[in-house]
Length: 385
Image (tube, rainbow, N blue to C red; front, side, top):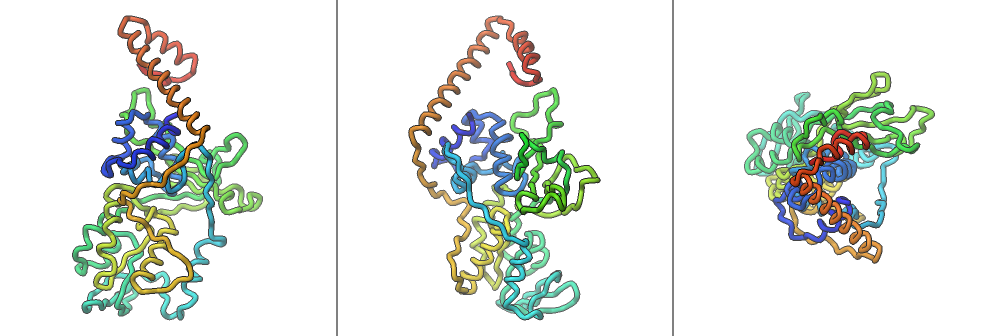
């Protein structure tokens, strides 16, 4: 009920304060904590490929609403976006990009130790194997801490913005453990979002405390890998329950974009330092942390900073704090009927809750009835007085 009502109400409120967090917004509107834990967190974790649950309560609600609109998730009609993939992996992208360059000008697996400013737009690049290369323009496509370390004393007004492009440390596990990706109703899901059940004890947790979560992708389905050759393969991000050693194949540590207000503010201010003093910045942290975001930022730098011509249209990343109005949504008769039924159901639930409280105040043994209902339903926390 919360899900369908929230979709339309959030879309209607185009004047929501930009600084209002998701926690503040949902609390003020009286929505349940389960809307955040069991719908918004799994939804955005799957869309953005990261565990959003920990940071979602502090995330700006206006940016959240715009993202829901961009993914066409408003309304009661079911929409299925068209996803594409690169057959053969991202190595094909790297080969295509390096094809037009001579091999001596392509330095792979070469660590950069330091950058020394030689002039107004002249830089000397020192590598870990003690080579020195001269460039008049440098593009940074690494995490913010590496940028700050490499630039050293050459950095000026960029420090505050670059520091705001924060990342988080994550773990990805390739495995075949079905326990981390259960077979639901006989069908193998492409993704599975799991909340840690051990965090709920007999004591009621704080209302908006984020719960531990993990995200699992069905690699066999997403990449069309035959199960007869490799069994069913999964990738689980930050598992709170490790897979059985017999089913574990590989483990990676990686960084990902930290979805926070500070990061959005840094993204919004990034154009202020772009293409200044022969320095440009483009990586996955210019968007939502995907490979596509890194490619888009690279194309934008090539076109806007170097005047490159490309045979296709490039849609740049919009300002994440832009207050543009989302497109209008046309609701049909069935949509209005569903909304009316949901509103009536919510009114009946509120009336029941108020009546229950009044009965308890008048001396009716509501606690005894609650205990009986809990026993009948087989749950420990189904109702609360």
